[in-house]
Length: 290
Length: 348
Image (cartoon, each protein chain N blue to C red):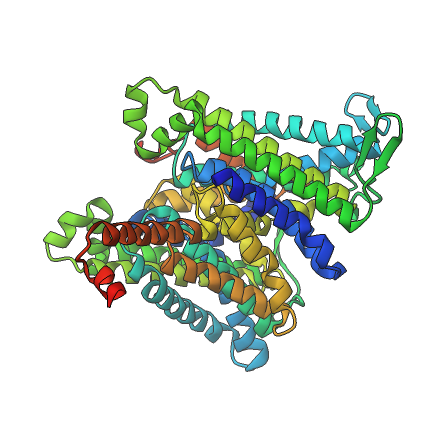
């Protein structure tokens, strides 16, 4: 039982960052209809920004997180303006392959800049974990959970309470009508991609210090983000949050009770099972069959 | 005329070992040839049915592992005290089994994943390949996991009356790969020109219309997936017996991406496309190696993919064909009009 409680606590920490990854991708995929293979690289990029600011520049750990978010926002906006805006209106396969090209080039770029040796980020938290009864959790992980929760709420408010958010939702529902009503669709697209990218960078900046940082760390993160989007449905923020926690729970239980080697298989198995047995997703309208 | 050109091209490829002595380049040509076979099989799905499978490396890897395990033998304990023991078989049997088992996997994956389309089909196929990779990594009793399967025997051709010929040298492997590639090309070419090929293209152009004229969608797509997977399995088997060591990295996503780049750059839906794209991207590292570090090469790799999609979105071969066709039409038009500008210039 205490083992199970420990898995639940780990699930909360992991699920929060997975939710960030998922929200970023579900916005991009849902609103822009772009299968964003560069999402994982933005995750890696966020982690390396964290490493650069804390270890290489020697600045404060808590300052590094906003820096990573802003850097992710800028890189996302640049990718959208340079690669996706000229391809507006081309089919989904073309944009997907362009994003694969961007992924390969940017991942090799991080390898070029920071090298292939795994890095770890110095953190200001004490080494002793917080012990509550039979469950223990490190202070770093608690901080990760709190920061992720804050960012999730901020994104929710941005999409549901601001003018930009209602323009995003209108574009998601019907791009042509939104554009007729005076929504600047180009601006919505660039903002969406930038926001989604900054969330991926934030997830990387938060999980990077928990594990180690290496150039290929984003590959699995990207697939997990796809799994979360498929679970939660396109453009559905609440769905992405729930999907993130379901995936984290499946991974924790899979690693704990089946075999730790298959931890990363859980996301893929979820994708296959959901798309084959309930292709409409758990919370979405039927829009992906046929 | 067309078959004459085909024979000339095959003869040109067959003559390469006669004047090319550099072992490094020969090695690059053999591995490129193996990947071209895999890219041709991907093109059958992507170019002729319009389904982008980003898990294609799974069939390549399953072919490689099937062939390697068949010719090495294995002894695997199963849950419940059972054991499966297999004695080594000749590699040529491994090749045949690789084709059959990869084809069977293509059948099951096709039946399951063709329920969804577009981006979702892409994601299901990626997931399938990753699950297979994780099984290869973790089922250590069968696959040795990350320790890799070593000392895979070379393919040996049985020669009646003379025993058998083991293909160990680069020269022999080059001709083996060339023979399989030509066979696969001929097979795909006949297939896409048949009734079945027209059904596939009909589905790609307009699925609703294709259904309404009586094309069985599931059957057509599944058959395409089976043939495509079987050819990819053959390529994987060649790879295993040529490199002679395989580990779970053979399932890496980048290998699928390499195949996709070969097909897209050469021209999807064109028979020669994967060959042209494959030669360019397969040999690119050979020419970039002296001037760039590996990281910079990968950056260039991604950059070239993006540039090709921007500049030649339909691929090299279809764009060139279109240009040739237009020029031929212009020449013909110029000849049929005696007072047109070009013929007037000729007379002047």
